[in-house]
Image 1 (cartoon, one colour):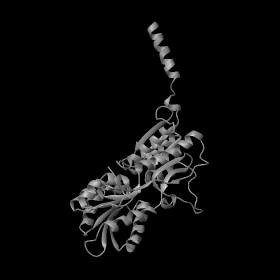
Image 2 (cartoon, helix red, strand yellow):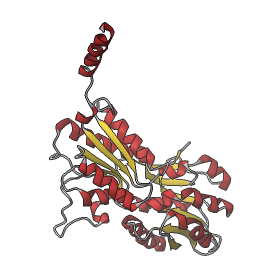
Image 3 (tube, helix red, strand yellow):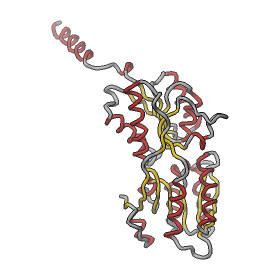
Image 4 (cartoon, one colour):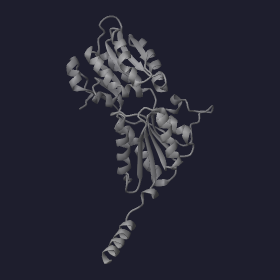
Length: 319
């Protein structure tokens, strides 16, 4: 009997020294799809929270869900988070951000890997954005620098530099990027040969179609479908000895030749810093969406060796 009383006392003491999970601030983190590069944003976000004193399971509770590319599942995930009245939503990639905006007008949303509200077409007639939208965004200004790398390093086989691209017509930033790149192509005496994909399942057929067009190089634009299908695109380009340029650092780690683009981990980290500010104060009045701060010129040394390309000193070799 004394043994059981002792257990009860120990249990009570343990309970007094820990905060029940249900009473901790709840963070609903949603990824729209599974991808090794995009996953770095969540790592950065969680690391930023920890650096600012918010540890999962200790004084916050992070509930992570991945929609695995399913739009109905994404909606169900956000419905669940809203029903649970989470303290804040963290959304990774454009589709997750747009769905969160549709599902809640009050819960603070901290976006990452998403374009500006203007590019997402969520500004109202007065140019105002949802009052509960925060986090870190990007515009397409960096595309100019990303694109300019190709004509400085690749010589066309004949005539104009022929650049292949796939893009998802359903993604606003992808369509806008293609329009911008077409404008840049005229400036650099280049020709863009682009084809649409509806999902990553289309990547094999569409990439092979483009590679039959006598390409000089391939550009992996800022498109979630491109992220998801990158290994398929890379495999086909490698078979034809066509180098891939991109605007995302993570894709260089996965086999693209070079990029001027965002570090996805640091993008998530920046969003996590802002979310920490909200958790500390409980207020959003001093917060607003921020532009992504860190962009890098990087190249993959193994791929550069394969194509016999030497990069300027302002490019960082990436491992």
